[in-house]
Image 1 (cartoon, rainbow, N blue to C red):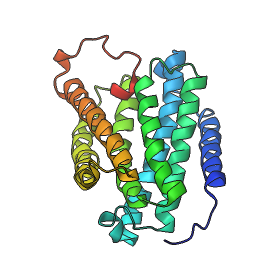
Image 2 (image 1 turned 180 degrees about the horizontal axis):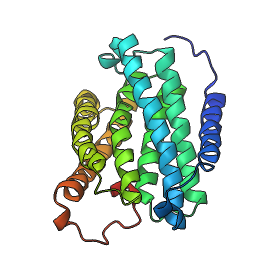
Image 3 (image 1 turned 120 degrees about the vertical axis):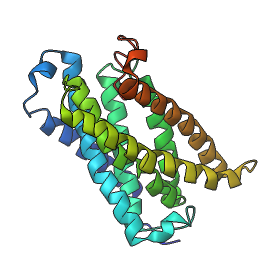
Length: 247
């Protein structure tokens, strides 16, 4: 196992503070008029801006990690790279920041699904951060951030009441393709891999349990996405009013 070149805790702290600083900087940007008129929309806009930045950086970074170290695709438990390790620390810092942001902004009740997702994601990432195992799994999981670029952009346009724009209509089809390629496909591949740990008392079994719960959440979100964008007449107007994760 290659030695860790950087202590885990300073990396996590540095990543968390980086996203905190990014949020402060993004809060200084001008807001769309429709967003500025509502304090909840304003918070959601700033929260999604940070998420959008994280998705761009992490999604591209994950692709580069796999290009540089293709064995991460196969040796999911044992393969290791410094870039992949730093990526997992970077994203864990984002999830820590976003969890704190949701809680201190008193949005925990409306965004409880996000909190559940973040706790499970951090639990999985910590296996790579502190035990240097399943770093490949963490990198593969973060391919989802490529999909999140288009998903987050979609949510930002909805918050800004821009669903009638051509850009939104184009993005919803691109988003659907990316959802299949970078969310459903990697998740299915990882689930198939981790099923080998079923019945064992190992770290792999713990990660399998997290993965199966995430599978359920992803399928639920996918069904909501299809209803919202392709069968809008079947979605009640007040449904998920405060849950920006599912809009």
